[in-house]
Image 1 (cartoon, rainbow, N blue to C red):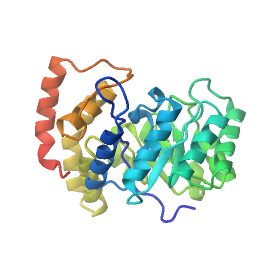
Image 2 (image 1 turned 60 degrees about the horizontal axis):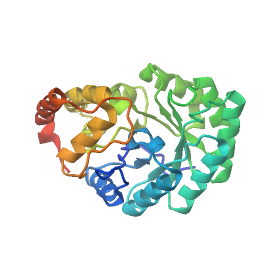
Image 3 (image 1 turned 180 degrees about the vertical axis):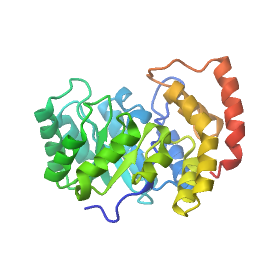
Length: 299
């Protein structure tokens, strides 16, 4: 069992690259430090927002080692163990354990998607490899899992303790998971850039796992909510929404452009994305959006 249960804003660091596409591990250390200074409650990666699928296996391990080393135990580190098979997931899980991860997160196999028995075997094998708490990432890239299947996994596998829920409608999925899993899990986190953060928290979610470019603003929403000032939480959240909506159009290009503008990474190079690079009009719109929230930055 994790002690205490994880709660709060757990951002996902981007994976910085140099302008030639090579891995920028020094830049990654700066991203991790930004997340710490911004008030994050934990760190997650490398997952989708960190371009994990564009990394070689060796690079993924380097990223895990770099994040863990940069954190140096200051925050919980949830390392990705998502693999194309159970055997690969076990490899990543054991490596993460050896390099100081506090917990693991994994989608089901995402290239050749497994049938239900394969999904069960995948998580059983992953969880047998270490005693770390495991977050099941329920995302359309993997095999979308029903609340009943999630509850079965949580009930039968002791270290399945958390869910990151990203199956639409996200908020209803959070409620259904809480009802189905009951005391077999310690928490459910939302994703989708924190777009539904307040609704998810109202339904009993434990936190959110957004990309990291405005971690300090997500933390401000969380802090206001936790203090009981729900009006202030919504005021900050409503100011953040235009950026979140813009992020839903541009994904990784947006995360990296904001981090570059904030002086945290040197290059906004993206290896692979399902969206196109920002054009002149996108940059103008981003100028206006960021100007409206700049006073909320603390890091």
